[in-house]
Image (spheres, helix red, strand yellow):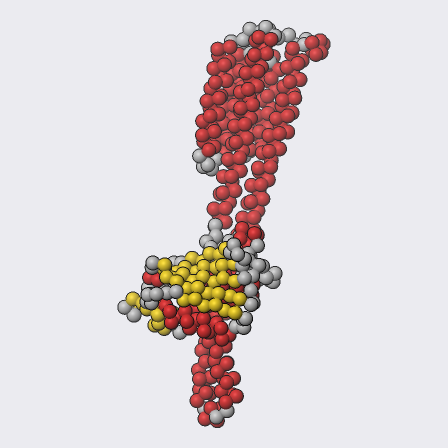
Length: 445
């Protein structure tokens, strides 16, 4: 088998998922950065107040640290919810961080505090995470805070004494601030950049998928037009071949009769393919629809497939106990043929078809003893051009069969069997193919 089929995720949904995933990861990075800020502020307050003996308004500064911790816990709950994170949330979170840093600097010397340069970290993070408008607003707010701190702050008895080198507490504070900025910028900006690159890669894949699906739509339109054009000549050929079989001169020649019968079989097969193309494009010809039963339809389908395909061993197991009337046409037949053909391509020596009834649904299971689906194909379930055959255009058989199954309100799923080989299961609601007062449920003509 060359593909698996099940409902695929629309490109727009994938794009939203890519943005949501990147937003959640970036929010998580901010949460980690804020925890580092909380611990760093506690250590700095301890070192300044107790080790260096500089008096600080401990109650106010510890209250700010506590508020940051509570805000971070709320942010953690928000992150665990898994809902998408918008730019405005990141923007407000950064504003809270800027406000907390400003309050701490106000209580500890304003711009004379060497840790005033931590504003640059907030600006760098905003440049990575936010759109230009939000980013420049953060720059404006941070710059305004620095200007205000130059005029308004509680004094800190910390002499600059730059000439003292390592012996100056101010110089030590500057070095710590520089190293802290450098390390955090490298670590967190690298992580954020990685998240953004992964988001961009996902969005690029979504755009590529959308382009491929647009190509499929164009191909479907062309195929639909060609199918409409082929319908009339195929019908004409079917009539002519029928007339030929009744001409006495031709009827007396058994070789010609055999060739005419084979031509009629191939014409009917072409008509079935045309009907399948039209239904996959959202149309149906409704040709060769007939009243039958589920078991008769399956028996005829298996007989026709065996007659036109060569295979070493084909196992047909019909476990339907309660037969029911239905209306069958070539579209239903072609849907199953596509699955059987893929199974035979993967496993030319053995293919099996199991049919059974599960409550009000018909389930057809096709298995083979081939190599099974590759992990790459299973990871792209329901997408066209996912094939193990390695030829251009491969992978469309089950993709079209999936569309037919969807039209009938059913499904088509695939998996690898533990004992080897692959398995494709077609499920259809019997109500959608049942005969109801002489009219087919949802698949009439």
